[in-house]
Length: 291
Ligand SMILES: [Zn+2]
Image 1 (cartoon, rainbow, N blue to C red):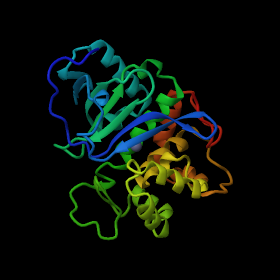
Image 2: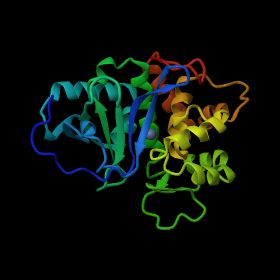
Image 3: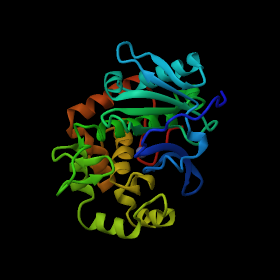
């Protein structure tokens, strides 16, 4: 599919996440993600949607809003997303499905809050990568993106609060006091860790060397380098490990505590069970990256 016609209105993408290949350590390729906060203007053209669809709330089919009409290909891609992730939650939260492509690999998917209705999201998928919907990288990336949708949803983060007070503040709003993200922040980030991160890393995307150095100093605390980007990415990345790993019987490190963290929550356990029932992808250890 090629881009046809004028580029339409872009939404306020406050947290555009996409997956790409990174090389960790001795040449091991691993899936990871990058997020660009408020990066609509800088988003590479290859991430611009080729087609934008509204997700019909009644039967969850797609209606083309703009771009190429490749409904058969795109409907199949959407079907594969809904075949992996809990469709009831997707249907409740995702109002738009975007199709893009930068070719095989590189960027696989991203999500963003819709600027017009911050309770709803767009879900963007590279249709080329969706062809291999059983691949570990595709499955784990979609799970990471889904973690953003549930972890930053309006039951978890108040998008309209003006002052966060003691609550964790992010671009999407203020974490609610009983939210998973607030507990995540309080447990793993609050205090010296957060102060040091802000001081030495700040905007991780703008400071990749600082991120790498921070990660090297705290390898036991993060499932991978990308997780050290910020608490939100740490949450989403660790969530994907929670889904595909067995519960760790005797956690010995902070990063193992992070994988186990989500088991405390029935809602998250049921999301995990759903996804695991749809795919054979598993991680044997934190350092295991399914292809
Ligand atoms: Zn992300």
